[in-house]
Image (cartoon, rainbow, N blue to C red; front, side, top):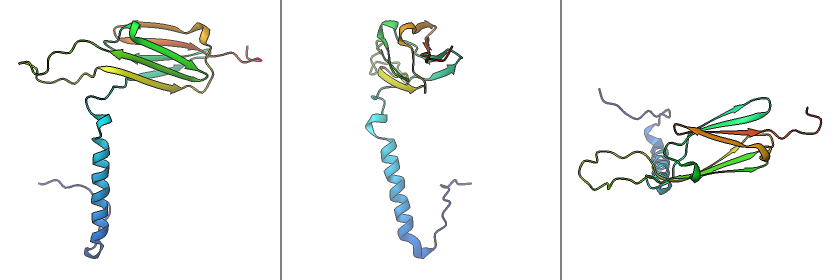
Length: 145
């Protein structure tokens, strides 16, 4: 059994120009998805979970190999930006024995909009086993108590 690309549009022979347009659009998307900014030399983006409690937001970010000294958290109103660098020494890729290298190195920067202003005076950051936990207290509005 051979596989073929699924195409929801069934074209008649007189509609071949539309098929060519469809192929050109596919090529454009393929080129976009193989763009340099998506290559191995591009930065990386950590995975995060965001939780909300009555008085705070908690962000847990998977950042193995990132030193606490290489992590910055910036707060602007309801937006939190987490930036850092993973700069472990990488083995010489041309050396014998390297079969595959998938872990990305370099800088990252991720901005999350939380929908409520953060109180910047009591942000707490802890880490364990490569997972950073950032507790961001909500700014209490007048009348909230």
